[in-house]
Amino acid sequence: MATWVWILIVVAIVVVLALLLAALRQRSARRHTESLRGQFGPEYDRAVEDSDSRKQAEAELAERQGRHEQFELRALSSSARERYVESWRAAQAQFVDDPRTAVASADSMIQSVMRDRGYPVEDFDQRVSDLSVDHADVVEHYREGHRLAEQSANGDDSTEDLRNAMQHYRALFEELVDSSGNGSEAENNSTRVSATKEA
Image (cartoon, rainbow, N blue to C red):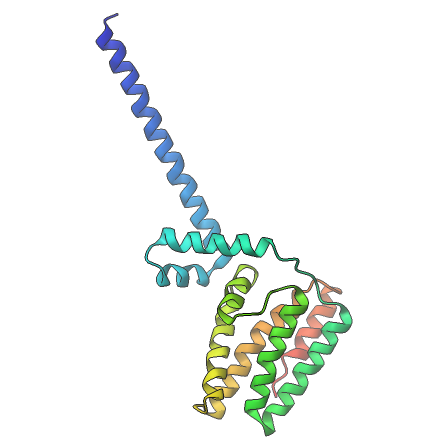
């Protein structure tokens, strides 16, 4: 067989292998995207919207996962969970007479629960990023509750804003307390019902 025929065969093989490799990379990228979308839900879309590119957003979300894997997260003890639920009830009761203080207490309580669960709590933006790995469905509640609480601290609020802040905080509080993995499903449901009663 002539040399040029062998060259054509080798070129054809190289082209086919390059196409297969490109297809495998594309498939892997799609799987990675779907995995991140599944884990982060609406937080995925927010990250893409806030980034220059989808690739940059996905790298940032993967970085969150890597940081999260280094945490030594733990379940709340039954007594700690009961203590937090009682404190939440007290904050909701306080809301009637002093909404600003109740919202500040709710914000502080969420940080305490996070700390007890093993999350770092130094910086708000980092707390949001860390929470988004396991609690993507409620992390937006935390952002909005915090925004309203800061607005309140600056004196630019209304009772309705403060009530909304408490509701947003409650969504995250319930998840952090209920996802502790302690007790039976019935006990966890009982805790959730108790924690969600309106002030």
